[in-house]
Length: 303
Image (tube, rainbow, N blue to C red):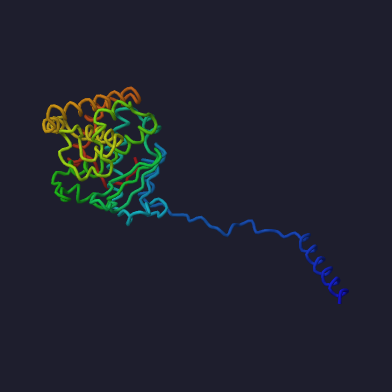
């Protein structure tokens, strides 16, 4: 019996040895095939206006990996995505080109936009308009409402310019400010102006924020949101609107807001060479041109 066991072991060993010595030629073609999408006219327009000149990618097709799994999300509509791409290009990218030069925009503007059709609703009764991630990406929600906003028919915003600012343009300037802050920190003195009145996630429960020195309720969340709100609301509103906020704030609140604005103005000028008053003038002029129909928001012609 032992003899047969030994013979069996020897036979198996010989078989394994033969197998290990035999070489096989692998198929050089991978079984994993990358999906290749045929570029449509919008993709080509994006290449010509975003990717080639600025190395900015615009993702309007739904991608689960780019989405936030904490919220129910839906894809952005194609027509709305085209309008949004024109709007961002004309009111944001081209604005910084004009004020700070194309090299500034190429270096600092986020390298990716991701569109979602619906807002991201939170359990505190608010919803997210957009976020900035890692200084490289702006995540923009609510794209499917852009046509209603432009028609003055969304959530009580009957003036298209006000709706565009509230839901989109101000959001982009807000998130871009976060990106700039990630690259160059703003002075610590900013936080100290109203340090005791920041309320983190409870900001939406408070009113009367102007007299306390906050330009919006969201500015009370923390000093970073406060800084971004100061910057974005200033450059997207005219002086009449700003003066009205200061009047409502009263002497003390207006003093706090003015002190914050002085720091924002100095920071943008010293860190990036940008005059925020010139930036505001350019944003408002371009906004008026867009609202007056001087900009075709649906054209996919490549110049």
